[in-house]
Image 1 (cartoon, rainbow, N blue to C red):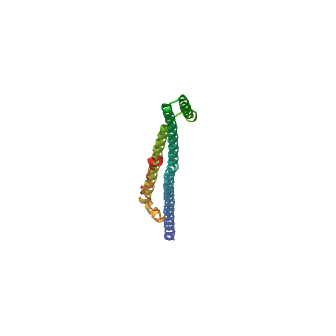
Image 2 (cartoon, helix red, strand yellow; image 1 turned 135 degrees about the horizontal axis):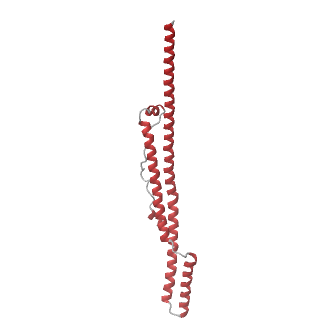
Length: 194
């Protein structure tokens, strides 16, 4: 009878130990799976930020280029009007022509100062240059953040023993950011301004 009690106690201890080990493995599996899912979502978020930075550039740069171009064209037309009025003064051969040309010059100068007190094209070009630089820097930061997130995820997917959980969960390595032909190129601002 004592042997039966001892055997039952040993069996109970073995079952308890197996239960504890199985429970521990289950908890470890769930924790590892949750970490992999969190890393996967981190990669997805970082990728969304990369796309957002590219979209910002795609939306912003053409509009800025149009603004700069319009400003430069307006200034060019003002300069043309003032130059034409000055040429009229030089060509004037009678007091009436001189008075008419002088009035045209005065009106052209007044238009410049009333409607456009400061010539802005240089400032607009500098602003465009700053925006281009800022957009490219934002994109680089987001690409770097994405690649860091991918690196963290891939380390978890490839490292033992979490690679076992990743394999059972069909979680594969993610690709690092690699520029595809053409899509990563910044717009040709010179072309946009023509």
